[in-house]
Image (cartoon, rainbow, N blue to C red; front, top):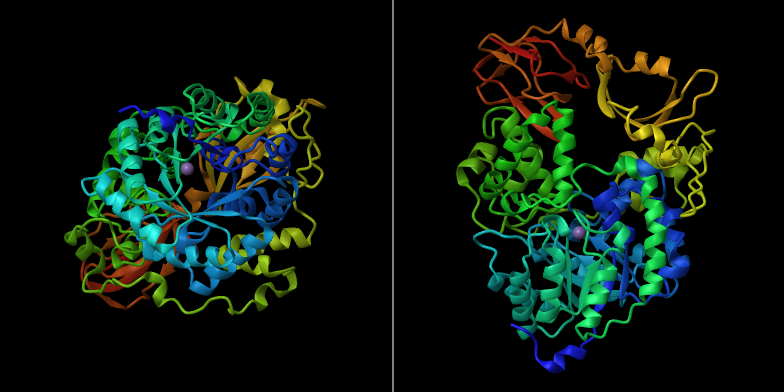
Length: 634
Ligand code: MN
């Protein structure tokens, strides 16, 4: 299976992913702009085919957690990385969000991204339903930038190399400039990689760009074999940001491929400089490294990508059900089969992960079906790769119809929507775009910006000195590196949910300060925002520390525990977002009575029996717990 001699002088190009996927895979996408820019003077001169710098998670994380303007980041990147192609990951019609947007928004988003500095768009659809990427490909080509159309790699009875090759042909016909094979879960084995790339290369005359994660340990071998099969560009992460749920190490791949005789023109000395830089930077973000970033060969059985794994762990933690992790991992492939074997990538990974978690937590398959699962079954995300379990669809939709057209065909233009609400904050089209994509968190961000409350991240990057200016009350997690000596033993609990007056707060200990006046400051991350508290107020704020949740017990006392036949209750904790009945209403068994939001998904709660609404114990906005009756039907 080795190559012929003439192939050996073939050029192999690299995309460095340290600035996007590597910190997304290892550090929860928390790297701040100064750290991304701090090494530009070296990274920009090495000769990578492109640098991956932007994508859905970076956009979201910038606005939600870092309180950074993602567009500003891009502008700064463009300025600092003058010689490099800047690449972004685009979720097709979902852009950088979680739903389908109308075509006018897609076009405008790509326009703005080009204006601010993106050169290469890697465009994918989570179902490989290419109707959902066509519009983006066209928009990129209109701006004469590189449209890298993408095949999401996965394994299932229907996902054969023949099918993927057919997909590559379809993408070439669509006008793709390059074709990416995106193996987000690290499932692409070396032999499959070789076969797949060889097959595609035989029929498609375009550069093939291979992306894989080291999650299962395959990736360095698979990239090597992919190159032997004819791959032109591979994705790697600088060694200090590599491996595990991240990517194969850049330096080792450069060395190996050069030694094999490929034309690889990247300077190992300079790469060492980059590696040294990120060795220091990475330490700042230690608090965000989950325990699920190592190589885990379970993925070969569960097919759950690394990112999804840590998400699931967090969700289960929220539901106080972390002990159910193994059961959920077993449930994931079953839900996936019911849904017609979609690849596990955003947003299907979340839909399937949450549905699988609910199937386990509630103790009954599809007892609760999230709105997102329902929408998927309605066809709102596109066409599933294989047949959908019609029993499940029936259970979810009843007699409701499902669609077979391209989902965005049903969307009216969205650009001209009313923006009165945010008028006072708008500084340009980019703001409007952020608002369309993430309305809630954008408004919060705009307000903070207006009030001068955005954090200042201009710490000296990569030199081991970090700003400790905490005067604005927003304390940055990456400033706790200096408190490292406390990390090992002093901090026992690091994350918990606190309930105060029915409100849930997600609290994370992000760091500990130095002792002064017999007091030691703790820094808490409350729902993504940093707060400083003293050890005294910590024990006050955190009743769950000792296992007593005071506020919750008060709220609970008014609601009886579900014992009667007509007691309606939520099988998992969450917030009641909609109450659909009032006292005296007549309902039939199975009717939706209220909607509870849990794990970022909406869940319909149904009445178990026919009858009349006799008692309502809750209102919209309340928190619901599984051992409480919310509504009583007689
Ligand atoms: Mn990836």
